[in-house]
Amino acid sequence: MRKPVFETIRAQRGKGFTADEVKAVDELLDRLGFKKDEAEPAAAVPVAAVEPSLAATNGSVGLENEKAFFDELRNSGIFGKGISENQVKGLQTVCSVAKEAGWPLAFTAYALATACHETAYTMQPVREGLRASETWRRNHLKKYYPYYGRGYVQLTWENNYKKADGALNLNGQLTKNLDLALDPDIAAKIMVRGMQEGWFAGDKKGPHTLARHLPANGAATVAQMAAARRIINGTDKKDKIAAEAIKFQAALEAGGW
Image (cartoon, rainbow, N blue to C red; front, side):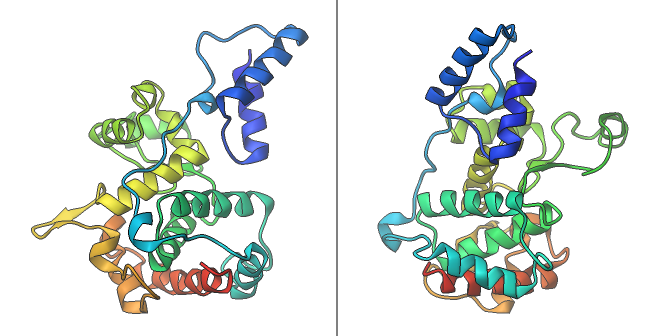
């Protein structure tokens, strides 16, 4: 069975595989005598670039000094006394996709804080009911099982899985294998597109998007960060997440975002 091999490698490296990498690993497994699975491993699915991008209006964005970013995060205390390897990989993945989308400072800071909270500070995509069994999910999440929350922002409901599949040009791969939403690269792209376009919540005024709550240029205030919680989950833990978003914002500024 090849799937466990791919899953182990993916967990260690903190991201999925390119098509060339899948081919190389498959060739090695051929030589080692591993039998092929009926389907390709989840990590092998390529993901289209995030569109539409804000890059045209924001110019070049991203970390100029990654060390300064992580030094400031360590000093902030968000992750306690230190930052683990998996947390570093998760932060890098989210920052990479935010950079690809041309996101401004405040957008990126709030996405990092959201991912941090929603994944219980692991910065790795998780399933709803983090430590629960699949039997528990089947019995307690009947409203939308098996389309329960997965990822950095807990993608939920069948329609949202279909929307994400189409937006990322996955050609049905996500709806056939819902656990693709746990791949770090795919999870980050779902979060970026979803928060940017307002997939997760709305009201009479329209979708709750990052642009609706946060500035497209410069730093956001604590009040603006707190209001942005409506993008994901009403007002739940809005003040706590806003306080951490301000710390992420400071770290991004220290890193030259």
